[in-house]
Image 1 (spheres, rainbow, N blue to C red):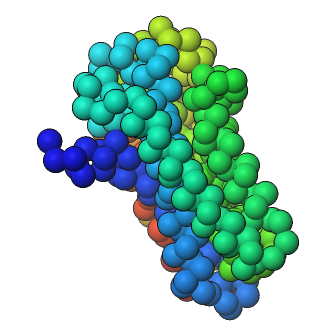
Image 2: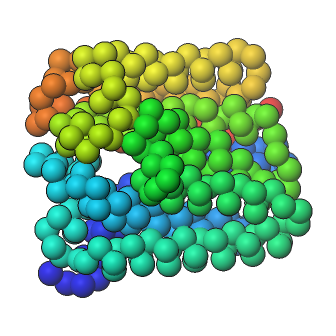
Length: 303
């Protein structure tokens, strides 16, 4: 296999939408609030975020391989089970670990430059917290991904942390509106991870990866999935009614029929790996399309 292609597969760029959406949204909200938008700073923020995301993917593969989690996973899917470059012997563990550290270093360097441009220490603080969450998601001694804080940390990192970081780079301040806007995005990306844990249930359980799906069981966990997916639309509706979100945010409801379909598939097939795959794909599609529509609402909406 082509060496470049191998590293692309290992980085899992198909999931970089988890970074692109919150950074684009944070920048869009800043423009909505201030009328200011700097494309150069936006691209630097996005590239830095993607480097940190890639570092997360590489180190997750490394530590899941070291714990035996990915090796024990006999039912990987396009959405779960890691990139498989280590269980299949395509790359060596040390190579993947080093790639993760290099990506963290590159993302951190961009973050330090943005902090210098913005002044103060807010970007530095956000960056340090983000890198620590990403690295210790599977690494000792915290191993966040092996606890019930797994989904919460994912939602926080790819929700408030990235939205507020991107907002601050553009606006040079923080805002409650940017925080509230990040909540639906945080829930959706946590649900992407959550539904992807269903196919990995047996391997995660064997490796003592005690995430919510393992601890609650699939039958109960699918109820959580249903509740939180519906809550996303309740939050947007409430935000519009309270004047926190622009009325244009109503366009996010275009994704509601897709959410209903995902809920039905998950409810019917939560214990069947192959039949559940449409729900995995739909959840990713909801996060991306909802995020894009939310960005559009802030770019064209009015106060």
